[in-house]
Image 1 (cartoon, rainbow, N blue to C red):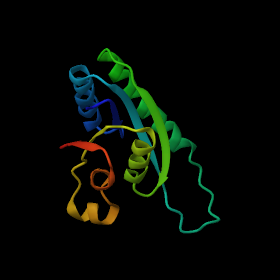
Image 2: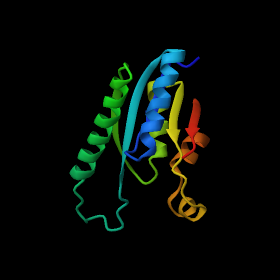
Image 3: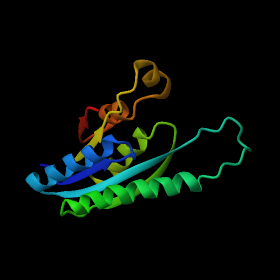
Image 4: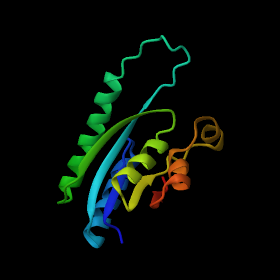
Amino acid sequence: MVEKILVAVDGSETMERTVRFACDLVKVLGGSLTLIHVVEMPVMIQPDLMFDSAPLTRAGEMILRTAQKQVEQNGLKADIILKHQGGNSGHKIVAVAEEKGFTLIVMHARGQSKTATILLGSVSHTVAHNASCSVLILRP
């Protein structure tokens, strides 16, 4: 049974379709909806190098607000979660899903090239192979 749906949002053009799909799921199956955005922090090669994460955090908050407005336009409510992760954000999505007992993760694949996937890693691949709950990945 789908009781708690976690929707990963990233601010891309595909995000709107992903949020709409998740809203449709909740309308048909019931349950609650939570939006998550993970700010991917740069991995520092030089430990003493200072990095200001505030602009990335503000951008993440704006992405979540945009997605939350879309949920409200569909007549639903959604909680929001903003997290930070160095490297592939899929690990943080999986950790939050397990920690908070989500029964389904909804996200989209970005459709990047095989080379980019090898070099950067795929968030959807990481989530699909590591989550203990069901994962629904929408194609771009």
